[in-house]
Amino acid sequence: MALSLICPTKEPAPWVAAIKAMAPELDLRVWPDDGDKADVTFALVWAQPQGIFSQYPNLQVIASMGAGVDSLLQDTSIPTQVSVVRMVDPRLVSQMGDYVLAAVLNHVRQFPDYGRHQKQQRWQPLSPRNVDAVTVGIMGLGQIGRSVATRLSQVGFHVTGWARRAKAIANVKVFAGPQQLSDFLAASEILVCLLPLTVETENILSMETLGQLPRGAYVINVARGNHLVEEDLLSLINNNSLAGACLDVFRQEPLPPEHPFWFHPQITITPHIASLTDTVSVAPQIVENYRRMTVGEPLLNQVDMRRGY
Ligand code: NDP
Image (tube, rainbow, N blue to C red):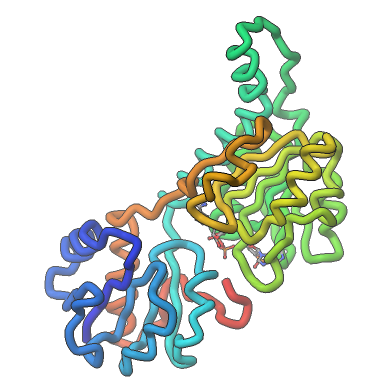
């Protein structure tokens, strides 16, 4: 039994160090020099070459290095008997809370406007809005969305959320399913997308949905680029239906140099850094899942392959 790290776009050294520190005895290998592929039972992956899993005849578990599994699940070489797990981690959750809170307050306290005024040496106080007068709607109330919703409500925002299934979260009004989406959107002055990318949620931020937000609403997408129909967002900002957007994720990453988002005064972009996996923080769940695999116990943070998240 061995664990192979397959992460061509990430530096493997910090992962190796964090796992070795917890489990020095674990047979840990790094693709592409991972020896006899028949030894590998556990793959820890990010941006793996498509089709690679067919090379590993004894694979039992594939672990995503991040919270999202959308690109991993597109790989048709994942054998049906293999379990897929993902990272669920308090640091990942709290970093996302920091980012969303910063983006929401940046908008509510009009920092982008003051930035433009500063360039013109223009001293012009704008009337601020109180946080309890602003409704923030969170799409996706999972491990991350639920915590972000609670954090914003503790700061004083009026917070609503939307998920597939109804649920109770203190001080958060929850809407569920496609039939309640319009009511949720109609009240969301700031919309935060924290959905997983699935067949159902791809292109969910479109003219049809964004057009139902209140006039002057603001959009924050920290989930995946393919949730957003980029041209629809641009049209709605350009015709003043929306005030602007803060985007961390894009259809094409890195964002191409000619992309209009780079130049739009009402769009703030960041390079997919809203929340980054901390190797030391997630190493215990990797080692624990490896142990569970060896003794046949139920795995932590298993992905439901039918739902796609
Ligand atoms: P979870 O799987 O824990 O939660 C997903 C939530 O989305 C659930 O509340 C689920 O509803 C809801 N949902 C899924 N499908 C639908 C649907 N069709 N309609 C309505 N609601 C739906 O995910 P996490 O909270 O851990 O992560 C969310 C996403 O955030 C990740 O998939 C990833 O793409 C993104 N992310 C981005 C990062 C960044 O740096 N930009 C970093 C980390 C994550 P229900 O509760 O009813 O099942």
